[in-house]
Image (cartoon, rainbow over all chains, first blue to last red; front, side):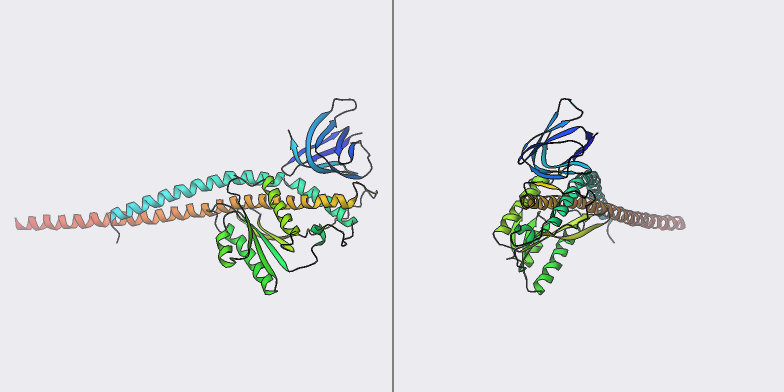
Length: 85
Length: 296
């Protein structure tokens, strides 16, 4: 029941891990991605990405700037131009 | 024959040159490791972006309404050669190889009756291009004030290129840089960057499901194209840095070794002349002694 999540910037691979849920700041609204999400692609706006390691856990926030997210059978990939922290 | 003092001076001067080349070689070796790590760290992003581009491009048919960056201007007259060089020398034939590749392409394009323009990144290589094509240098990008060109610089270059493209200054852009293979081999590489060549689609229909897009495909693609261009330039800059350090390391290694050989040769010559001098001195003294003894 884990979602494979990858966060990549031009400079490095920031995250590559299995998590419970990720909430992405999409260009047309935030969306949460759980395991088994339908294939989906969206651009993202500047904002906070929230990672829930397990159900009900406190989220970890990462500030993103520009980029897009892709959900495929292999998991969620977020390509961000710039990541803070 | 040079005097003993002259020889001694030459040996010392070669020795101090050797110290410089050796220091530069060690600096390059340390920087190479870092540049290589940087280039490797940038690969996942480029690879993922290329996959996404590929799957998007496969879904969209290129028409007149497609973004200009993908479809082109419909002409093939003015070619812009983007030449990425370094700012520093002491790296063997690194810069001249890249410029040479660009000039070959320029000549081939001109033979076909096309117009050739240049966009120069980095300080080296400016002189040659300006001498041969004084009127064709469209713009130059200065990287001397940053220590190592990074994503910010790639972004600036990409933005400038897109602005020039939108102004109709050129129809096709080629990028010239050096691909890093190893410290011994760097390949001058040519790549078309505008219009963006559709990445080869690796038939990623493994999931088979219909992908939903938000906003729709065209809008995403329009946002993706400049991003893709930036990433390609960034990758080229990183490859260039690694290549520069590799070339520098090899060139300085050769220089250090040559200096060593020269020192050995000069030392032998120095010792020979010293011995010759001693022998002559002894012989004259001996003759005097013998002559003196005979006189007794």
